Each structure stands twice: as C-alpha cells, then as structure tokens.
Image (cartoon, rainbow, N blue to C red):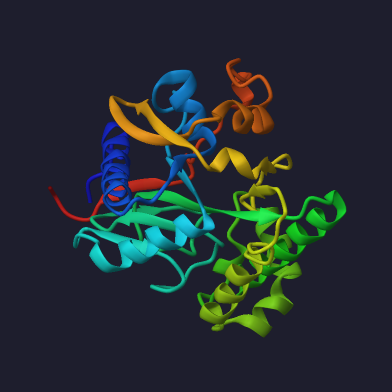
Length: 275
C-alpha cells in the first residue's frame, strides 16, 4: 500500500471541504471553519504550517441539515462517520475519503475509515458557569460511555502511552462490560443530551465536548458569515472571528512556542490501491 504524502493529505482534505462547501451553498446551510482551521485562515490564509487536519463547525440546526444532505447525496468515494450511518465513538461527525486508510496506535476505534474532515455541532450552553460546567461533565461522562460501547476488545482504551492505556483499560472496564454493543443507543443519548438547552433563551454557544476550557461564545457571533481564503479556496467563516479566536487562543496572531505546535502525527495514512 502506498503511503499518503503530506501534500496528498492536504489535497484530499481540501477536496472534501470543497464538496461540503458546495453542498452548503446549494442548500443555504451556514458553516464556518473552526478551531485551528479558522486560526490558520486568518493568520496564514490556509493551514497552520504544522497542522494536518481541517475542522468545520455549525450551529445545531445547520449541523443536522448538512448531515441530512450528506446522508442522501455523497459520491461513492466519500463516507460518513456518524451514529445514524455507522458506529461512532465521539460526539461529532466526520466525512472521510474511503479510498484511504490508516494505522494508528492511538486510534484503533475507527479502523476501516480514512482521511477525514471533522464536523462539529455548536450547541447552546447555560449562562450560569456552575450549571454549564455540570452540563459539560454530563456530556463527558456520556462520551466515556460512548467510547466504552465498542465491542472491539480493548480498543476502548486506545492511548498514546502504555500507562494511559493501562489506566483507561482498568478504570473504564466496568463501563465497557455494561455498555459494549450498545453504541447506537448511547450515541443517540449523548447527541440528545448535547441539545438539552437548544430551545432555551440562553445566550451562549459552543462545542460541548470541546477540549478548550474557554469554549463558550456569544450566540450572536454565529448569525453572520462570510467567505475567507484558505489555501487559495474560498470557504466560509463566522464574520466575528476575533471574538471566537480571542476566547480560545488569546493573542491568536502570535505564534505559540515550538513545544505547543501539535498535529495528528499518530496517524499513518495510505492509499488502499494505486490511483
């Protein structure tokens, strides 16, 4: 099997975003580059130099609309990681190129999938800080149940270091024994939980299972969108990117120290057959 080069990895990801962008424009679905991808668009007009993935974010209504369209009209070489389509172990969706595959010691749950683009739902969160933290903890607990619902042996304990693997294997074993094989039901439960405040007047929004502790934004910044250059393509972003990026990164135009420049190097990508 031929290994995917860094150039091919980015080209494959960009083609997926081009496709998603076309679907969104056709069906009037608002989306935005998110996380490091939005930062890269603003600071570098494309990828952060050491980055190797693309993140998209959509409000819950737009997220559901996009996934509905993707389930109906995907080309044969793309597939979804989404609980309504196949087993999934994280509370968000991915579009992946099924002509590619990977090996990874850290991720053994998603075997059989390929180069992906992350698609995150942005959900309403309570304004009260204590209530918000409790809500996020509930979702985190649900996400652990989701991971441990895997029926693939000890894959639920996948980790970057052996002692992390050992700790997860022991601590999460009771949950695995209880929930193995119940992936579809648990994924739906977690997805519904994340929407708990959707029909409230709460003024905050964010990806509830985010790794960023500061992930909590004014709802209003997800109303207006505009085009932005990303690797010579025109994708979409929220207009008020400054509020979003400052909340996550502080002085986002300043480069981080080298020891903070991380990527997904634990994946090794390959083509399933010669192209």
